[in-house]
Image 1 (cartoon, rainbow, N blue to C red):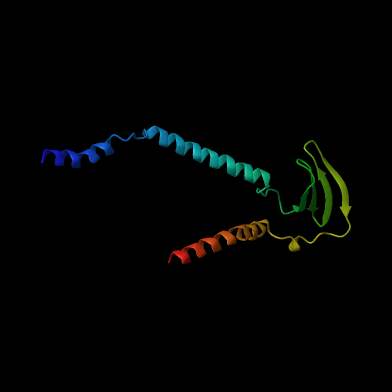
Image 2 (image 1 turned 135 degrees about the vertical axis):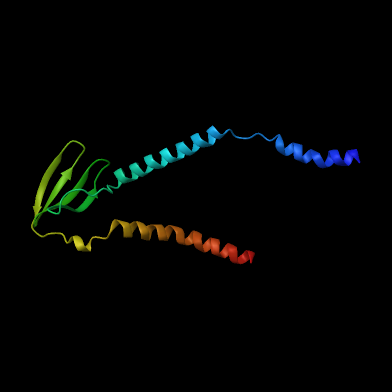
Length: 136
């Protein structure tokens, strides 16, 4: 009878001897994750120029990257559009556009991202759906 009691109580003592993580480790890990997310979002916003500033008189119509820190931009000032070259050290006026670029035809960057994300996710969703149907 005593041996049966010891056999039953052994798994209970084995569970209590497992090492536990101190609470400050999980707090520090959570803090690190939050700070990493903040830096990642700041990098994304800086890289893709998410911030829109300025007035209604000055607009960025189109932008094209031509190097790591160089870009060509069409800006609209009033009713005129100008082509400017932007580098890390300077901004140069390249020309005034005689035929304005229609900004209404320009796709919304959010729509472009949404369509690319849908293209990426669709094969994975189809595979998950196929796997779940096979299990049922």
